[in-house]
Image (tube, rainbow, N blue to C red; front, top):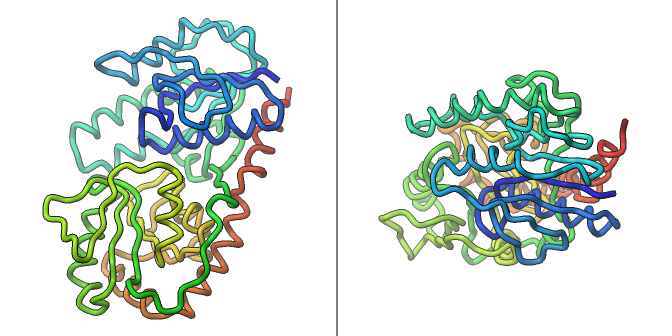
Length: 341
């Protein structure tokens, strides 16, 4: 099967999670004998088994420019087009079977934006997001909660994780420096700044040998004696950070899905999240990880760092849940969707 995939982002040019999902899915499809071409504003990514067709980015309004530039692409030679966003302006263009994957809702992101400028941008994107609701032949979303915001979504196919690559390291009963891992951005809906505040004010006084590792840029007042800030790192380095931690915490106010949650579970880490849409669905409302209020976040983190038995219990539940998101299963679902009709 000849498969075209569109994604503004790829790992070669962006840390946005959608790009990593598309990269992994495309590689899975190629490994099964399919011919895959990804159309992106980012260049070829390291480890790509698929062909990358570069759509030159515009210096301003890159998202809207990419969507407009896709109108010039001839998709007629493919058996299926799977758009991961940005197919809003393909009206009147000849296309094969057209599948659109919604990675959450821009309208929901707008509601949770603390920045006015970003909120306006998300509102504009939310309006564009209605186009593939009518344009695509088939609509799928990475989580069921997306149906609250967008109509006509017939299928739910979650994001995937390489459970072999993220396989956990041996359990640590008494680590020298019990470590909390955070993957995201300090500000905005990921709320890394909240985690820093709680770590410094509530965790360190009770667990003085604890460490906070943030896979993001450091804050201006970083404290190297108890904090590690990695900046942007490779996938291999990210896996090692997961394998070297004891607890994972991502206190986002909104996630359409939350790939780091399933990566953490696959790596055997207990997950602590705030009850956003994606976390509630991925963690099955607290069956597979802790859903914490802001007020109880510090207490939950301290208890986990001090209680090896509870960490082990969440580790076992998370590893079991992570199997539901193994890329083999996810790819099966996409192929079934591509081949319908």
